[in-house]
Image 1: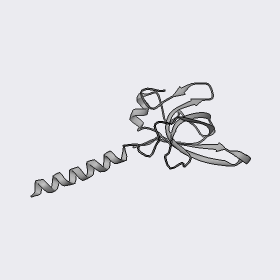
Image 2 (image 1 turned 90 degrees about the horizontal axis):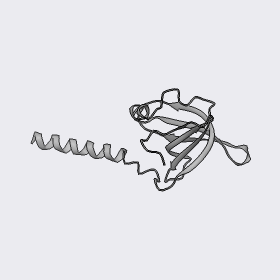
Image 3 (image 1 turned 180 degrees about the vertical axis):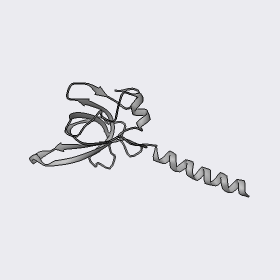
Length: 124
């Protein structure tokens, strides 16, 4: 009986972890691009996050949120905690959110000096 209970709990937690990392919230068939100013870069696990101030029509500023990979994955692909600093002007290529809220899954970022960083092992 204890074995079946333990197995049921393991399956429950495994399905929750898979659902979280399925990235179903993002449309991976669309690649969009936006320019803006880095407001904040969170170098954290389980996902790093970029907050980008984007100026829209009428000079209205919105903050778009872009999810990245874990610190370990990003480090392997050339990122550091200081890769993006508040005030940096960047262009972000991303897969948009399916719910149409601003931001999405970061694919690559192009810095003002032209350097391009991706947290994934292959860039489009």
